[in-house]
Image (cartoon, rainbow, N blue to C red; front, side, top):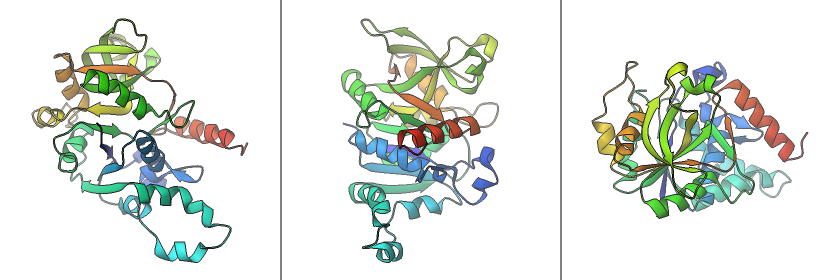
Amino acid sequence: MIKKCLFPAAGYGTRFLPATKAVPKEMLPILNKPLLQYGVEEALKAGINNMAIVTGRGKRAIEDHFDNAIELESQIKGTEKEHHLHEIMNIINNSTFTYVRQQKMLGLGHAILSGKPLIGNEPFAVLLADDLCSCDTEENSVLKQMIEIFKKYNCSIIAIEDVPKSETDKYGIIMGDLIENTDNLYRVTNMLEKPDINNSPSTMAVIGRYILTPDIFSILKDTKPDKTGEIQLTDALAIQAKKGQVIAYKFKGKRFDCGHFKGYLEATNYYAKKMGFI
């Protein structure tokens, strides 16, 4: 039912300067694999093979990564190094990549609206590469879990996790009612973008995984910028939520916020241990 995954990847990554001056933040590696590749692999495990990427200036490395490199491939063909390209070649052979540029950095909502020509009029997934998620079994990706929920409820699905109250001002925070006979699904009644810590309605924070219905585009088009001049996806989802059309899912898995140094280091150590390097 979900055939396309949208990857907003136009941000500057200023927290990681000067490393991101010439290298897209989505291409920063966790061990030998860039963040965006982890995200694409998660989408593939969920049965999605159409990757729609919203890019910007200085992001050509993303397109080059998900493309054939004839000279490199011929250079290492038949050598002991050839296996290093097996994973990325499998992705290239089993995925379709489309791209559009976000002309101005005007928030996540604007980035998703910029991706409308790549999506069309159908439900779709959104994955933020900064949020790296690992599950108990590699095949049970967070997106795969969410798609199963979408099949049942046929509305927008957002991934959430509990965060410390002291960090609620960094996230979109939901208000909602636990769905009967579940301990991890909420019918969202409202959402607030980065509320003041003292006024946060809960500690249930939205992370970078979404299944969105196509009406989100018309809602985003009419959503006014916030005080920073950005169009927030949270504001558009709040409109859907007030109509009972958003389900929040407390996903099964571990999430690393790789948009910050601490989360990036935690992810690196986690995968290094998982791969047996330390």
